[in-house]
Length: 377
Length: 234
Image 1 (cartoon, rainbow over the protein chains, first blue to last red):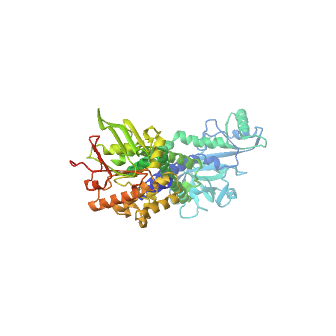
Image 2 (image 1 turned 90 degrees about the horizontal axis):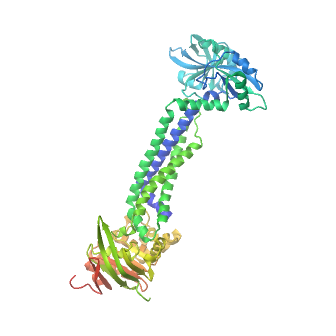
Image 3 (image 1 turned 180 degrees about the vertical axis):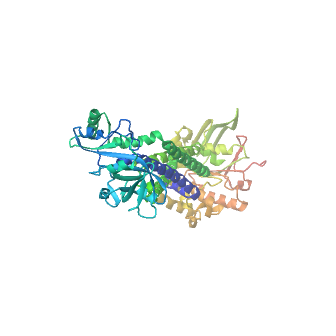
């Protein structure tokens, strides 16, 4: 009987493709929007992910994320270095600045100053040039977002910038995870950064710390906080802080939530309507089957098989569509590094199952309510 | 075969229409024998559809008992009644109610598939039945590729393929001209009437009354005539 159910469904191509389209569209909307949402949220932690070698971030007690930081006096570095279990500690500065290109365009940038000696704080990989270029005077390394945004047609290597009234020369391109706002980032040595960004008494944004062997990051965090009075976070905690900040301070979760809900509602509407029409068109056949001796249990299985087939094809197409979308835009820095976490297809699957269960149940009610005797009327 | 194929005793059926209760059947007592072509005749609204629905186990009577081949069918559980229909009753609907997206042989095989028979085996048996009904060459066609008469034969094949003991046929000649109607009735007599099988035809087509072995006339929910021929005043 399952075979008959499937043939009943596929024998009406208009409704079959309508149902598949409804599920595929819902899956695409839910999966794609959730994927963008999660990846955008993770951009809140990009500043932490770009510095792979630091086990612990130390900051002023009021600082919240890599982008929302209150500067500390330079003595904080010595305090941290004095804590037992600290293998190494280096200064890290993050500040906003304005640059003027040679064409006269103005662009807001983030300047990141990394330790002069070790260069800890730079992204792990370079797209062009070497990290050693920072030893040359006025050198900066630009991230790939900056390259695309400021120099879309030519290589930025060798380009001079007016950075807060100081001369800066681009000598390398870093392979960095873009920030939440896709701000252009210029990496330079800590000593250079102090010149590039407007001065205040305290300039040190963070102290990056490596832990000694035999100690967990959390243990070191506890020690640093106890002995210095500063705020310390493990790499994972600080990454999470960046994500939480976006969740708490932007309308993004609500906006994406609305889109995902719309995906669900549109799915219910399209699939529900088409399924009801399909059942209505076949109600005489279902009535005949019931009269002949097909049980309600078998009818339920038939409708479930129809819903299952539509769900399987529609869901597969929707997820494939999302994969295609991510692949097609992977070269765009805005979508750089985007991936589909395994939980998202699972959430879509649950949503699709709910849509089909709800619409299938509504459609099935009509069939189950149909009296076999109605076929004689 | 001893005893009637179908026996109804005191069958009454009420329907609710708003606050009113309308009694459609008034204590019907009748016996239908196997091996006969029995016509259930009456005007629209006489209760013949209600009676036939009750006789074949798809509509519960308000009162009374119905025995089909010795089984009190309304004493069965819901599931057992459905199974009883599947094993023992063949239906030929006025609108045929074929499934449009499966071919003629598969349509005819539906009762066997519902009984759990392998689809290919069921289809083979159904194709043989279509052959018997002279439309074996149409077995692979979809219903919309068949003429009305061919669709009706597919419906007849579906009613007989599982060798039921009771065949119920609703207005088989309603949409046919006189000659086609008689050909269908000849066919039904040939394939549906058997010594151990009861065949009931619901009709109000007076062009075929002479082909019945027995005619039951229903008026206002009561059997007013039971004989081999129609009464002269009809």
